Length: 433
Ligand code: GUN
Ligand code: ZN
Image 1 (cartoon, rainbow, N blue to C red):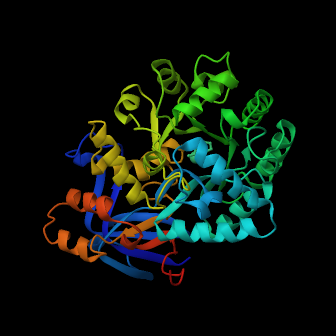
Image 2 (image 1 turned 90 degrees about the vertical axis):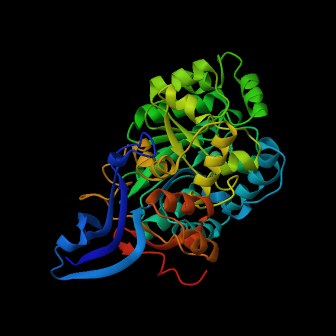
C-alpha cells in the first residue's frame, strides 16, 4: 500500500479548549509529518523523526494542516438560490425555497446540482456535511452517489413535508415514511454514507407525519434525525397554532419522540428555559448557523446560555439561507453574533467547533475532526497569506492564535490551499474555478 507523508505545520484539537491559554487542548507541530496509508492517518509527529521509507512526501510548509471542516446543517438543494432577497424566514421559504426545490423532480437536475455542490464544499475546505435534500428521493440518490464518487463522509436525507408548501413538493405521511425506509436501506452504512431522518419542521409536517417520523426513528436508531427549531418568531407562533397542545416548540418534537443524541436541531435561537433543559436532557444538538441567522434577521444565538445549560452545540452554514459555503466565513459571523450578545467566541473555540466539536456532535470523533492515527485522512491545508490583505496582516502576526483569528476574520476559499479526502488530493484536482 502506498504511503504519503504531508509535511507542514500541524494543528488539531484533543478536546474542547477552555480559553485561549488552554495549550493542552490541542496539538501543534511547527514542522510536522502526517503519514497517510489506505485513506487513513497512520502516524503524526515531528517531521525530523518521521519514517519516510518508500513514502511520497508532499511539502505544505509554511501552511497549516488542520482537520477537514465539518458543516452540521445545510440544504444542498438550495445551492442555486443563495442570496435570494427576502425580509424573513417564511417569506424567503415561500418566495424562493419552495419554488427552487420543486426543480428536483426533473431528471438530471439533482445530479448537476450535486456535482457543483460537492465542488464547492471541497473548494471551501469542507469534507463532511449534514445535508437536507429535497422531498424527492432522486435528490437523495444524487447526493449520496456524488459523495460516494468522491469518497466523502456525508450525512443526508429526504425532507419529509406533507403540508403548507406547494403541492409538487409535498409527500404524504405514508409516502414520506416509505421513501425514507427505502433510502435508508439503499444508502445508510454504504461506504461513508449516513442517513438523517428529516422532517423539515413542524409547520410542514402534519401530526400524522410526525407520528411516522417517530416510527422511523424508533426503527432506525442507527440514523440521525434533523429538523429546524426556534429560528424565527412567526415560525414559532405558527407552529404553536398547529400544535396547540404542545407546551412549546421543542415540546412538539419531544412529544413525537424525535429528540436524542443523534438529533441535530438547526438554529435554536428562541428557546425558553424548559426547552433548553429538554435539549440538555435528551442530548440533542443545537446547531448555530450565524450567516443564515444574520441574513434572515432571525436573531442572535445564545451560545453561552445553551452551553452553560449543558446543551451540545454545533456550527453550520445553512446554505442557502447561509451566505457562504466557507466555515471560515461562518466562524467570523459567529464571532460577530457573539460580540452582539456580549459573549466571547475565541478562535480556538471556533476552530474546535468547526472540526472536533462538530465531529463529537455527530458521534464520529473516532473517525473525523482531528489529526490522529486511525482517523480518516480528511484534511485541509490553510494558507494564511492567500491574499494581499492577509499577507500584509501576517507580516505582524506572531502567534498561532493570531494566525487562526486572521484566517477566520478575513479568510475564505482562497485560504484553502489544498484539501485531502480519504487521503487523496481533492482541491487541486478540481480544475479552474
Ligand atoms: N425552516 C424550514 N425549512 C428551512 C430552510 O430551508 N431554511 C431555513 N433557514 N429554515 C428552515
Ligand atoms: Zn436549514
